[in-house]
Length: 225
Image (cartoon, rainbow, N blue to C red; front, side, top):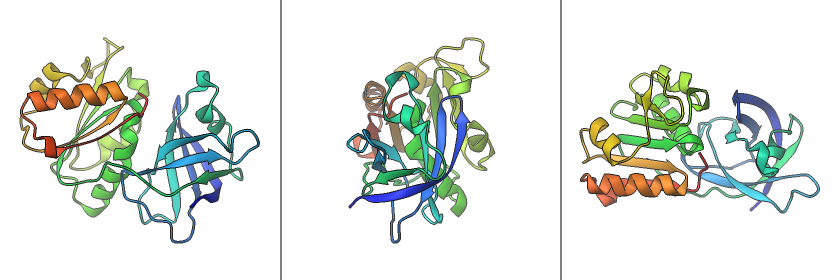
C-alpha cells in the first residue's frame, strides 16, 4: 500500500547527507533496520523509486530518513536534495533483511550505516547498547554520518576507518580479512553488515574465513558508500 506523506522538515547532516522528517501515516509501523521504497510526488518522478531506511525510533510521531545525496547522478537523491517542508513523497510498505538478533559488531561502509541508525538508537533508548560495537568505514572524516551521536552513545564501542585520508587520526584502510583479524577478538558473535554489494561480500567472506558462524552474519547490500 502506498502512502503520500508531507515533508515536515529537512536538514543537512553532512556535506552530502540529508535528513528528512515526514508525517507518519496512521497505523504505519516498521522494524528498526528496515526500509521502504520512496517516490518523489512530482511530475516526471512518480515512477522512479529508491529504497531508503527508516532512521527514527519506532515510537516517534513522525518518520525520519537519513539519505546520502549523489548530485552527479541527476537522479532521485539529487531531487530529494531540492525538497523542502510542504513537499510530498510517496512511501510503500516496509521491508528489509536486517533485524537485531543480539549483541554484536555492526560493520558499515558509507551510507550502509543507515539500517543501523534506528537499531542502535532503539537499543540506546532501552539501555541495551552494551556489548555492541560499530566499525564504520568511509573515504574521509567528513563522510562519517552521525559521528557525534555514535561517540555520545553510552556503551557503544566505535572504530572508524578511512580509506582516502592518510593524515586522519582514525584507522586507515579497507575493512578486509587482515583488518578484522587485528580488530576483532571474538568471532562467535553476531555480525551485521551493510554497504555496497562488493563490500558486503568481501566482509562476509573474510568473517567466515576467520571463524564467524554463517547463521550469525546478518547482512544487506546495495547501499552505496
